[in-house]
Image (cartoon, rainbow, N blue to C red):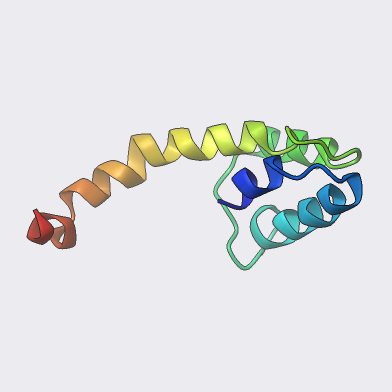
Length: 86
């Protein structure tokens, strides 16, 4: 959701500010909500933040969606909580 909001930002100043916040919250080592992305994706994302644009987090977002689709979503569908709901 943070990336989707980020992509809608037009102001370069706000882009930089939001990029920093996303990096600190989700990307940097030991971030409060650190996401599981590979080293290559993390490096590309960090390089993209030198000059933030609406696509700075695109690769990371795609990788996270792929991981969720392959792993997290399947586990959720098999979870006891979800099974109780259906």
